[in-house]
Length: 153
Image (cartoon, rainbow, N blue to C red; front, side, top):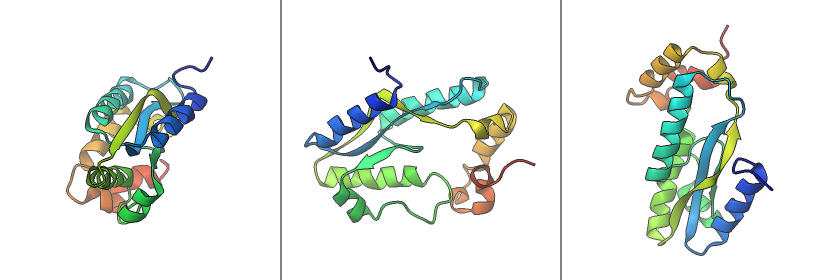
């Protein structure tokens, strides 16, 4: 029997959601591949999963939508160097409202994502990176998004 974290269950939940006539798109909770992270990254992850579910925002490597929604919204905004999926989630939610559809976050299963970048940095460094990204325009500045583009020396 699949566990709540197994990819087959996530795909099954995706199919159920997208086949439902009131669903225009969505995402899923996130979990890390390994469990060796320190307290701070795990706290951020749990906080994100709660925010994602409550505000219906999809982040990370798992989003889904109807083809028409992708075409009408223009997909991902390539002016972002990070968090383009959050901007797309916002556009997709707006499209869903206009078409009387729902944007849904799958909570019964999670997408597994690599935690290697978290292993490269201390909790303090990760906190400073997060703070730096709160600056207006930071997500559209490649130099400020080095976390996603550079390996530590």
